[in-house]
Amino acid sequence: MSALPAELRQELEQEIAGSEHPQEQVINVMYALQKHYGYFSDEAVHQAAALLGLTPLEIEELATFYDFIYRSPVGKFVIHVCDGVVCWMFHEGSVFDYLCKKLEVCEGEITADGMFTVLPTACIGYCDHAPAMLINGVFYGPLTPDKVDEILEKLRTEHCEPVICR
Amino acid sequence: MAEQVLFLNRQPDRPLTFDEYRQHSGYEALITALKRKPEELRQTVLDAGLRGRGGAGFPTGKKWSFIGKGQPRYLVPNTDEMEPGTFKDRVLVNVNPHLVLEGIILAAYAVSASKGIFFIRPSYEMDAELIEKELQVAREAGFLGENIAGSDFSFDLFVHRSAGRYICGEASAQVNAIMGKRAHPNKEVHMTDEGLWGKPTIVNNVETLSCVPHILKNGPEWFKGLARSEGGAGTKLYCVSGQVARPGCYELPIGTPFSEILAEAGGMSNGSELKAFLPGGASTAFMPKKFYDVQMDFDPLAETGNRLGTGAIIVFDQNTCLVAAALNLIEYFARESCGFCTPCREGLTFIRDLLWRIEIGEGEEKYIRMLREMSDAQSHSYCAFAPGAVSPVLGLLNHFEDEIREHLSQKSCPFAGPGIEFRDSLIRLEKSSGS
Image: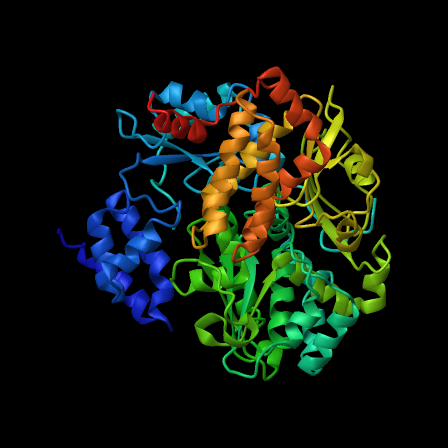
């Protein structure tokens, strides 16, 4: 198991120590480790457990519960495509299928360049802009194939802070 | 335009700032309230008839009155908002973050809470950042932290970032989630006695909390007078989406008839005719056209056997297959089920497979009875999740049985095809049949 960079470890230890109840930091710790490893790896499970004084099993049961914690490797950008009923209604030429074809991946796979993973996601609360998707905490909608192309191009070429929530 | 209360001074493209909110007597309700006793606030909110806007419609003042004697006490403003079709809390936070914060601080004072945990879903990350920024502004202005506005009352608020899952919106599951446990609901204890860290805890939706400053400023009678329905109180943020001309979040008197809310959203979209609507998000039942004039409030909808839920109205037109729509909804709930109790975990997937078979033309007459039996069986599940999940299925059975039968007799979907692929079901069915 590779050690965490000292700076990240200290930062997390401080956050946990400064917390009235250390266990309430568990999701923040999972997000931070996910950001560091690119996904919530087996190493991350053990690191989180050690940091919080929990068992790896306790971490695992949380990690597998939440859909924004990725237990398998993902691309630099995770595209969460809303499959709620409102977006579904506007699904002619489905955004999800379009993205998979365009990026040549199936659900959960990583594109050859390591940039993207496409996942179906529970209603993201953007029904007034359906169909919609979420990439690294940012909403996009209403989507058309042209708009999707534009967004992918922008993410490929412009510098963007990688991966997920804070 | 109807009287705007929560959306007062709404700007089209940005949140109201702290200064703007103060200029329109923002935080004045708090300053005045801090001179009164907490129990007076609870009574005023009870008298105003405010009911929880998160879906259950429980009287807010009553919930507050149950607060246990233990210390410290916690307040959990709930912005999980994962009910499909619902986006009002996101809009509200972005229209007037300080109204939300003032409501939270007032509620905290009313129940003598010393700490608040603002629960936000991961897809609202941008809003979590906004709230954190505005929290700091409120803190620097002396409205959060030690001795708020020079009083003896101290309270601070922190953001909890969730990592997903619908069940986290349920109060006891949410409290478990904050404590770093798997977010299963817990019906063994009362949150008001043994909630967060075993201490008295109030979980309130943020739309509910945002009504509080206005109630305290203008009085219970004024608040009741805002409603269109008999016995109703206040305004409601209705989210309108689906086949309408102008989808969006509209503030109207609670109890406004569905027909008028639809008109507010510009009516049906071009070429669309109304076939059905869900009145309050995915866990309410489909309503056919005959309910066109139903008043959108808790009691009038309960009288029809339905629920106001979150007031998220989803509109379906003549070209949308309701079997496929119900399948989409149950697909969602089957995936989101926490899996803790058997009726929900096994029953929802069973219903999904029945609907799937009907949709692809492999349905049988007996499936109609089986759908009803399995839906009714959800009343045996542990929490309110599964009974909510089967509401659209029951609506389909009660009002659109003909449409199910068309699928059976034609041995295919009578609509030009759902235009979508139900990936999950498809893959699973393929696997189970070994192809």
